[in-house]
Image 1 (tube, rainbow, N blue to C red):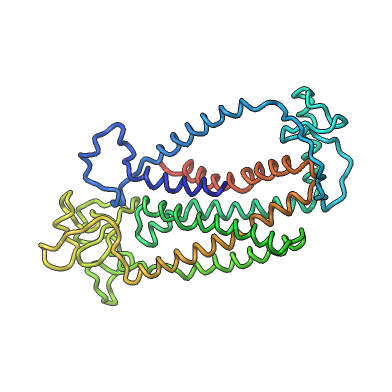
Image 2: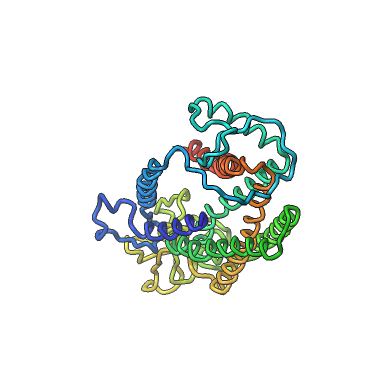
Length: 381
């Protein structure tokens, strides 16, 4: 169920990006751009406000839980044992709120007394080599997945000429549901094969190796760049050996075009230009562009890059491979969790999962934000 959150987030983001970023303050009917225009900026903030409100109101329900839950008599005794022998440590209070045997620590202990035991239990968990290796492996995996999910939408926009809304919608409706299917299949295989802890480790290593090989295939999938005036082909799309590749040309020398922004336009001659300015357009309706070859009445451009031949087939292949990679990679989730909970003592399973998710955020997700923050701080103003 945890994976359905990002799926809903991508679909919600696709709807939010169809709304203009300043729709609350301006009349959007006067805009001369549409969501298909590369200059369009969607309402990226709307999803944060909605999800923040839902989180706030759902958290209020947690105040209704009591400090401890009554113990229900169960004749069955938990048979799962830790893979490694227990060490001497002070047992923490029950992290799941269930009242345990009277000989165990009293649940009525003060909050300070309960907090004092946390460092000891955390040290005990991190001194378990199997637990530590599983946590580090999960951190490296979540770092790859988080970076992949964060930049895949922008990659689809640039490589396959998709809009932001379409890219987010495709991610939410294809890759993440395939990951959900992979988690389900991984748990089904563990159950049907009755895998031991060692078998679960072997299964996790195997599916991760196969998933990595599938991700390598992305290097060979994509669309050709196509002709870009002044970048890949000279202006006029000539193939003369002496023609130089320069974004500036006599046809736009008086336009004072800037190269610090990339707003591509597709000319009627089938060539992509860095912007309408570099195409020599002298009007806001993208007509009368002096740099285009052909008759003057066809000297018009449209926002976006020119479509590359065969790009549709390459995109469908990329989408299928991405779904297969997501499904195979997610099959390692259930074996990893089973290995983790079998390496610790039964009363520490809940706390071990909490430590896992904490380290996933600290070591797997947040380091990806540092390059983005540094690039914004060092950007010239």
